[in-house]
Image 1 (cartoon, rainbow, N blue to C red):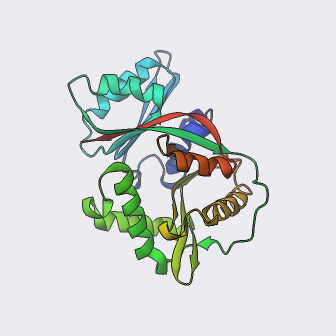
Image 2: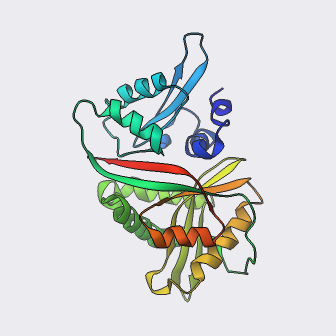
Length: 262
């Protein structure tokens, strides 16, 4: 029933749906707990993951209010992410006790559902465990740049364990040149309908040379043989990143927001 509910809006719910497909509804790997909201007649009106990363899919304001009240008691919450309008409403109830966010990042949700034109051959491959140290270091640096804290400092063993599992699932894609990590991308969540990407990285010394565009187009062409669309979020203040994804064929889907908590 939950999967069916989430499948109504697959681009918005890919993170939660992917976790459930991977781990089930009850698992410490979800780093949180799933909650449901029902109408008086018993109809499912909302599903939320409340925990380290809090995500909400609610079709009524009552559901948003209920989830916000539950989330107030979550001790390990790091961020809240979702559609801007829903998250703003959620936050108004979550923070009515005077809570202040540490950081608010307005974002664009981009989607690609057609194989890019002019895909060049690139030696892109799934990462192996031999790549773990370099991938973990890059991901931690990107997390610090975006959110202001490093997971290698907050939870080093857990972070390495989660990165290793993603590598074992063949969900980290890399391109090395002369033993240098030039490009990396993480498949964070996937369903038959949507694949969600994060952590897209190009080595600082190799940017503006077309490497990132070639690699992302190649990766997109591979993933779109297994899923109907690919989505990702980008900070809308990062004009270079917005331009990069637009050139790769991604199109604006909706306004998003990530609220980092203190």
